[in-house]
Image (cartoon, rainbow, N blue to C red; front, side, top):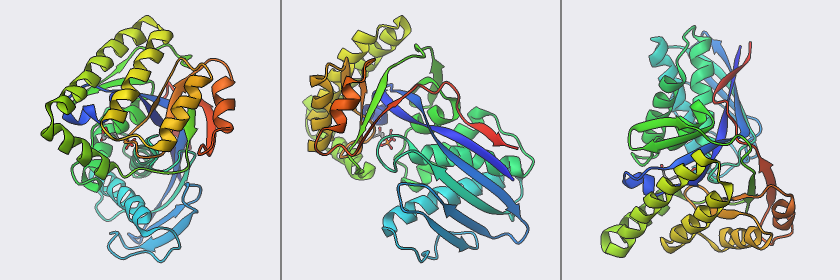
Length: 330
Ligand code: PMV
């Protein structure tokens, strides 16, 4: 048996613009997906999702997600979850050159699903790591990031940046611009506070919406480039440890995402609740449409305000996680 875990992430800056070649800076957070893998010799797969924001389901099948599992959760979510696991299993079989390997897989995740915190990337990275180790192969974090990215590309119909998977594999703050991915220095006491509205956005629809606006209006294309400028200023602020400046830039970044149509009433309400509580800055994280915001506040004021904000289902502090994927057992 092998157990690996990998962290979720917030976008400090740059989601959506990263799709068009601008840089983005995601940061890993101390909320992890944990994947347990046992090799089995009959070539079959048994997947148990114990703790996802989905209610939990178990499916047993022979290797492809074609046969719809008989479970009582929204089928779209199950199909997506199964696609990620199938992809991770294919990558592990390929890396170990054992095309017929079977596995029992258990997923436990403390990262809300589809909410902008990189839940799928964390599950895929941890699953590839655990499954390859179970087959006696050890990949580097960069190799894991690359294989996990191939899975995301496949499941998301070619619409994925390397940001989530690279950040989850490496940990800490990272900078992603196209295929150029690197870890960058950041203060390790960034005071992240997360607000979650209990919902999820449809990344494909939101990305398509921005693409259309960008093609239709020069000012929308300029808005996307302006997000790139914010990211470049943000990298400097990170390097300088200037948290006030980071907050100002996050506020600006949220405004531009809102202008591009990817915020929502609940995300805006949470952003304003954070600002009213004197957070240094606040913005949505990830694709938008619903899900999570991230704010910067060293005090408890923002988390407390968010807990009393209508439409906010959960609010919690999340430390920067300087460790990426790691083996938990053996
Ligand atoms: O919601 P998430 O965490 O999957 O982030 C999506 C980020 C986008 O920039 C909108 C798309 C991408 O693949 O980078």
